[in-house]
Length: 289
Image (cartoon, rainbow, N blue to C red; front, top):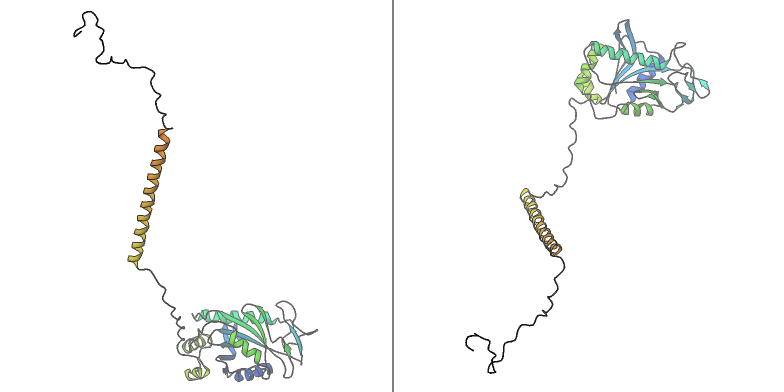
């Protein structure tokens, strides 16, 4: 990691240890340590601002007055502890490290706004630097999204390295040119482009990977679909015709009623004609008699 320290900086022991730790990290990034930015109330000292290809991080470095090892317990409102004892932090009496970090993040954001530069989301972290030989666990605590506490020194820097490489997940967003523009907006100068290239920054964002082409899905041609629709239409007309014929037959049977019975034989006997050749009875005035 490329580390830049202001020539006017007067680093305390914890800050010097933090700089040594950062320079050992094989991580792509730029750290500007002990920078001073102008505010409405004068000049504000910020522990460090770190750029990685994924994001920007504002850091407040806090050391210890004594050697303490054990389980670290941090809180936004209560006193921090190491095991059963209060954390012997190198801070003025009554200073809350979380409030101090929040103020630093706000001052950095306002400085960017005054320069008409939008850096995107700013994350913040309190970097606890224990004395060498002291061990604090866990090595990282999250107070809320975008606000963390991380432990690290020149001997135990694994947790710090993991945190710096993952505090802003997602694809790369910071190119060499954007880092130069942001540092000029924040502190008035920018590192050499060759140094940023050596630190791992790219001049252009990498192109997103292309999605692999899947097997082309089979699609019925439009002509085949039209023929299929026509076939269904013909089938529907045929079924409708059969139903109409069947309905007509049923209606005819219901309207005719039961079959009529055969007529009974008539009881009237037709007059028999007299047999030819026999005597014929003649009536008066009957012709041909």
